[in-house]
Image (cartoon, rainbow, N blue to C red):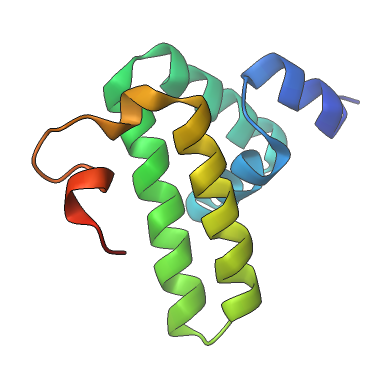
Amino acid sequence: MISMIDMVELSGLSEAEILAIAEHEHLPESAAAALGAYLLDSGSDGEARVVAMIRDDIRHALSRGDRAHAAELLAALKHFLAEHGGARGDRPGSFETQKSL
């Protein structure tokens, strides 16, 4: 059985990022890690899709009043943006140009 440590090493994502993708896509963690790795390999559009997934998760957590989980997801989003700068392009609609969740 593949461990979370293995998934992190193989995917290039953090545990929190894998869990956020799994939550958003309703996938097992191993499938979420594979999807995330695929999206990272597909370039900035894939990175932007990961950002969108995490942002959606944050919105959903806030809508149900789960501020603690929203804070965890926000930390995951900040980490992702720090590690994968291609997701921050100056394209209209990108995370950085919207300035809001």
